[in-house]
Length: 116
Length: 114
Image (tube, rainbow over all chains, first blue to last red; front, side, top):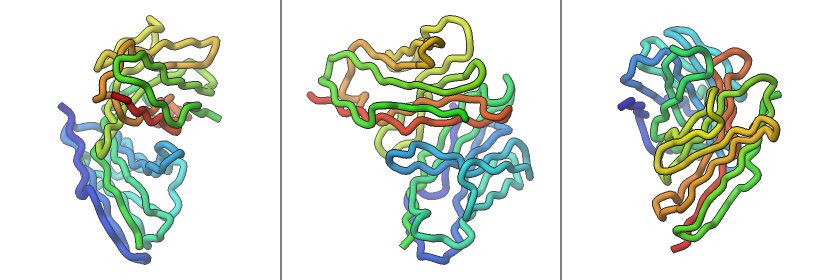
């Protein structure tokens, strides 16, 4: 089974702190994604990566950056956390074969981040 | 622009009753369609997906969905729900702008009455 793990299930940070959310997948997937999930808004894509050191902005990249130094690891960085970044953050990965958008995305359990 | 609408934010059904969750999409070409389920405190798990072929798709846990191009819909169904089906359900469509992106609906929260 594909396994996507996220470094923390729950995280509490203060406004202005730099926050790192880590995601690791064990299936050699090329694609990795970061979403935030808010009630009534579904999942919104923050960033995605289709290869090491490659990244693309999603729909809501403002206030976030990402890093992918190794194929299995994709990090989301909040440069200066703000209260409006309090949310559930979900990481996902997918295999490239079959073409863009056609492959199942496998999700981690999520990190619930609270910024005080 | 591509979009997915799940008209029902919250649905309550009795255990053993049938279920239909609605999903409508807006997409400029033949879509790839997905239903995911999120149990409390968990990540998303794929229930089923449609790429092409038979428009009635079978998934895990006894779920099925039917693609209706004329109605731009991909509704999820189950003939008899179990208490363990209580969860949030998300419909998604892709690919977006030639990239490996999906657009998700707002989600439908399902409550099961005993």
